[in-house]
Length: 548
Image 1 (cartoon, rainbow, N blue to C red):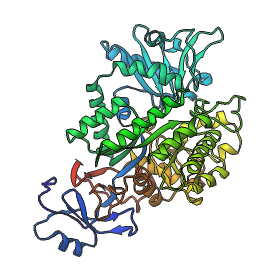
Image 2 (cartoon, one colour; image 1 turned 180 degrees about the vertical axis):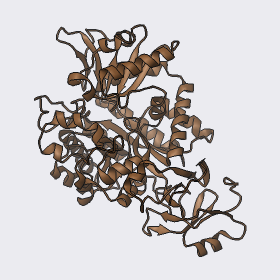
Image 3 (cartoon, rainbow, N blue to C red; image 1 turned 90 degrees about the vertical axis):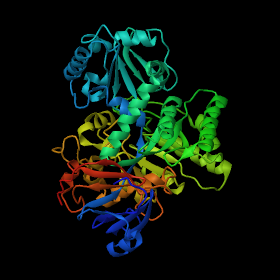
Image 4 (cartoon, one colour; image 1 turned 45 degrees about the vertical axis):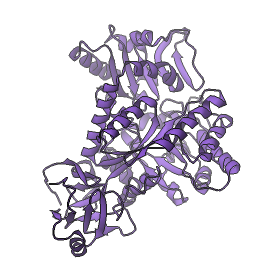
């Protein structure tokens, strides 16, 4: 009966946090796939009418379903099937997990792993010999937790066609030892051009369909009703189209099409045109292409983020896109009405991203824009004011500030003001920018409630015993939830679909097993989603064990 759409559904006797102008309500009414009323119990009963199916929530807390502000949907499902290296904080533990998986899967043609951190490797430089020592007979591809570096054994290097003479493309590196031999570490654009296409060639449509199904199931269980797909490509898009056509999408996806730098402006702009075509010709309530995504730099952990002053060891990284190359791409997307999402972690890359938007404004004149900068980990206060004045959305991920993964981040930057201003979420809203929260899964866990714990405490969801990291940057819990629901929907132009519990929007909401606003914040780590509703349809349900 929960999914009977022929009658209205009355959800009553609840504590509903709406993420809307009227923050709290007691009841909501669903007619078909939409919300018909949000307010008090008595009015809701009259609106629903005598034939409504009544769900007495017995005081349970209801939230808008979370909208992940930055994620990689199919990749999240793929990572779930790989060797899990999260928390493997030594080379020996990494080796043990890979060896164990290989022994348990003797017929797998290759070993895929994910989750190692640079700080877990002596000197931050993994070597193929470390993997050869445990698996020499099959290729091993171990993706770093941030998905900006990949570590290959000798068999994988051979399979990918990478040898000691392979040139590093602009914006990426095939790392070599002192004798010039490839070490097995490949990062940024070198990974994108030399390794990922090889792995994509081994992945079938059935594999992608299964990975998408795994991600959707995980989203439903954890209360994610919308996701902002960053770096969409043809194969993943085709999988999403298949699922949408079959009615199998249970998370609404607003997607940003990946645009790679080629060194050729016409080739760059051709990628923008493909995004324009997709945005214009296929849009449903569950799948839309809303913009393009560009990678302006890399990551702090891999020392590939582009900084205004060097890392503690004196090195630095150039932006992947120069302003001269990026500006025409942003201007073309802006002129076509697309959003632009720009990965920029270091302050120098952030300045390039802001400069590209300035160029678009100057060239295209006044219009409605919702361009974004993703991550913003090391940012100058003056540039926060600049981005806010330009209406650029600050898209940030609390999970990346988890103290359990911060040691190497802090070490490579050195003991200076950059470390003491890392991930300054409140500075964005104080300057007037829209702040959007997400997870960037699978670079971090996808579950939104632990993400909210980090946002509201600056403590670790991975190891809650650790002290807070820059506690003055913590957000009020209610604000964090708004940034992960209403604001995240707005930032991908889906505010007309969901993000709030409000009349006229789709009935996308979740029911929790406790009142997270009245309980200690630590309980966010244990809170369960009892029910996830998408378009009025229950896509996840569990027997209530309610802890008020």
